[in-house]
Length: 148
Image (cartoon, rainbow, N blue to C red):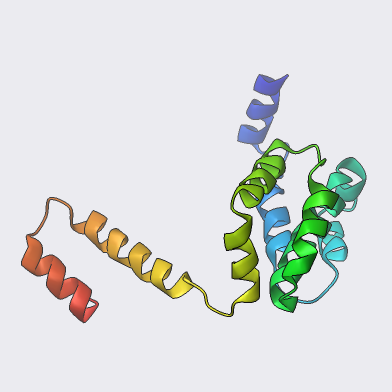
């Protein structure tokens, strides 16, 4: 069956749809608006076939609201609400939060972020990987300092 479907796709008889990345993009989107309406626009029967998308969207939005509202006292409620969810990767995420509760609480409360530092580290590693085996340290240094 799968081989036949692949042949049909190769011949252009059927069109394959991949909604995973589009759904993730909608769920992680910071724009105000109805996420369910946007998912419905991707495919009218998507929410009928996968009703857990609503639950995941609610989970992500509630977690983000903890940070935007700076309400660290709601973190325990959020953890209790979602710790029995049947997604192993969400349960793993929740266990990680519970193991380092003090750091997560402070990250919600404080206005500081290490995002800019992480961005520069990512930029430096990208430059280093691009130049690996091609040039010496002096060229790498110039490239980092002068942002070629």
